[in-house]
Length: 195
Image (cartoon, rainbow, N blue to C red):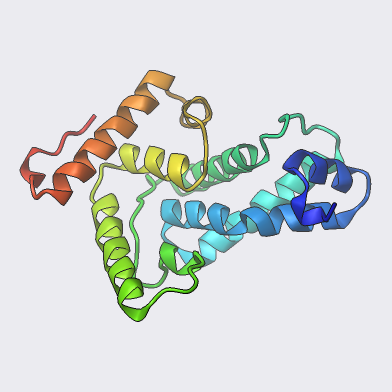
């Protein structure tokens, strides 16, 4: 079986046993999702790159010390590390994180699309642009849950643990975020709910 086809857990075991390729494949597998999630939280490319690197330094140190025991939940574990590093950064800076997209980086540019017509690509780009604008207008707590859930593939239990709220609060924030996006799509922005 090719290394690329192995599960996260198998790749972690390979790396811990001394095969560097195991970690290389894991990083390659999740680098786009992880970097995008970090960037959406910090809105600063150099800072996002620093936190991305710090995340993997922490991952490597934890794996090498034998303290990893996430039972096949590699991406959510790495996302928690990254999220905690973002929080640590803002605590040091004594300012609240703002999740806003800038024209310098486009989350959808990193996704791969093939065999599409120019018209299809233009329509997709317009939809993604509109969606990004709407997501950026959500309250920060709703944006955070939406990003973790959809870009970080984290469960609500994991989101609750990382954000230090109850699962019901995380679910509620997601529900409000989706309702608010729906209202924005149908032009009913005057009634956005903050939850």
